[in-house]
Amino acid sequence: MKVFILAGEASGDRLGAALMAGLKQLTDVEFHGVGGALMQAEGLESLFPMDELSVMGITEVLPKYRHLKRRIRQTAEAVLGSGADVLITIDSPDFSLRVAALVKARRDVRTVHYVAPSVWAWRAGRAARMAKVIDHVLALLPFEPPYMQAAGMECDFVGHPVVAEPQASATDIDNFRARHDLGDAPILMVLPGSRRGEVARLGPIFGRALAPVLARHPALRLVVPTTAHVAPLLRGVVADWPVPPVVIDPTNMKSDAYKHEKMCSFGAAMGALAASGTVSLELAASQTPMVIAYDVSWVSRQIIAAMLKIDTLTLVNLVSESRIIPECNGKHCNPPEIAAAVLKMLEAPEAQLEAMQLTMQRLGKGGEAPGLRAARAVMKGLTS
Image (cartoon, rainbow, N blue to C red):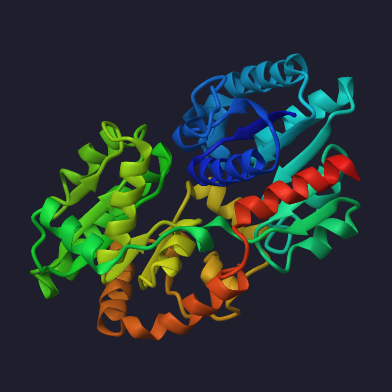
């Protein structure tokens, strides 16, 4: 079987790698497409660097629009030239669905989109538009299939891969602390995003927010995992932070070693300050209490705020049907409010544990690995 698989950012790379591993368990498969280090480790030779597609926000996309259009055309031609039996697009809908439309206009290739659009949050019309070029959706969240089916697409809830990720043992954590000379100091994870734009925007804000936190907790050590394409920018940003953090940089590490280091850092932390996104689920999986903070450009913020239909951006809050995870988004993404939220979280971290446990249960923890479930859904669609 030939599969063209396309991811545009770090979270999609994780999903794609798990799906690829699942497909390899079920059948002989040849992969083509675009992906990051994790998908490449599963056997993908990326058509071009995935980080070219890691652009977020309306005004942030505009300067790269022409280049992205060229990549859309190039990717569609590659799909058609590969003879793929199925095109699997992962998240990044603005890019992915344009590729799918060009492909569908010339050949009836089965199309699968992994990660349902959050029509329950904003832009409800996206499902109907997606149905014109997508046959089948793989949903990460248990409440999403009815929205997709109502628009005319097949949809399977396959669970979220985060529930199958290994967690650090006490020995793993002890060894991690020793490797980074952390001793028994309390650790705060700081995660300002996986995109350059996020790090450039949020990194300085997070740094200023940390000053009063460190004044109250002077023994606190900071740990910041990053991605290879963001690492040089991040190192420049954290140079202005009140204390130098430990940066977990995959640049000169094998992917398995980096995943292990990141897992250990999550397990060692007493809490985290993180950008909004999938990372909230990773933190929940490791039972790490968190504060979520996020912002985009002023123009993007106004447009998105006018369309938003939900009162929280944090997946743990949504899946657990609680609002226990504190957020500092939009105009609230400022150093004083973030610092106050982090200090409160550090004083009562146990308040979040029940919601995090319920989230993992609802996302499929204890069942078949989501990547394999997703692979079975893809195969079912091809044979039905």
